[in-house]
Each structure stands twice: as C-alpha cells, then as structure tokens.
Length: 193
Image (cartoon, rainbow, N blue to C red):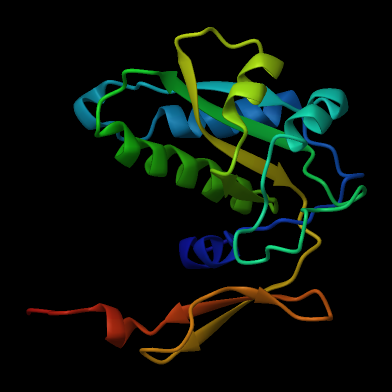
C-alpha cells in the first residue's frame, strides 16, 4: 500500500467487527513502531498499557466518551466495539514538548494499524482516574490518551469543503461517517519556489 493510501485509510473509526480479535503481539508491534519515532530531546516519556482481553476491553470501554460532534451517540454498540486498546501514559510532571510527542506516537500507532488493514480512534474524553485504577497504574502515572483499535466496519467519506463551510463531522441515516476537509488551497498561506 502506498503511503498516501495508508494516510487516507487512517480515519477516526468508531465501529469495529468485534469478532475480529487483536493479539497482544500485534499491539506490541504497534507500540514498537511508536517507540522508534522521533522524541523531543529523545526523552521518550511515554509508557503504554495494552489490552486485547475482552474482559479488560469491556472495562476500558466504560471509561470512554466517543464522539463530541455526535452528542446523542453513546458509542459503538455490542458487536461493534474495539478489540484492542493502547493506553498512553506518562509521569504527571512531564514537560510541555510531550504533547508534541503524544501526537507523533499516536499517529505512528494508527498508521501502523492502517497498514495492516485495521483502524482506530484517538480518545481524549476519558474518565482517567477510573481507568488508572482499572489498569492498576501507579499514583505518579497520568493517562494521556487512549487509542481504540479493531477491524473497521464503518465507511468514512472525506469531503472537500469551501472556506467558511462547516467542518463538523456527521453521520447519515445509512451510518456513513462524513468528514469535511478544508481544501489545500485554503490552508497554504505561502508557497515559495
């Protein structure tokens, strides 16, 4: 698969084929990709809690909020829930550049998943204290982000919009997820050369 195709396949999927399990080894491979990504000051501040266990996945699921732009949707129903999670954790007093690294490692994990025909979603709406206890993480550790993973069953359509049009994603009655994207010409301020 070409890199551009992998990037386009890397959408925020929120519905999965729950019968398609993910292995611990696959989750470790995805974190291994992230571990080799660039890191500000090479500090490598993140640690990871992984789950491909149906029991733990169920408990993680209960701590998550799924789609801010779909306020009436409680998240995927049974049968369409993620079959793997990567929880990204750091010590509480992590420096500011860690936020940049967080995006780098999360995107690396999701691109690795997309290259394997999988999909995922970064979730920041997390009841972090509850999840920290479920995962039995130490008091000094703080959950930064949860990545839900699985085999997508959702169709996601990218749509170019004109400047000033809504960029809020939405779902139609046929359960297609639409993601408005601004046009390249509207984003590039200057292009020299």
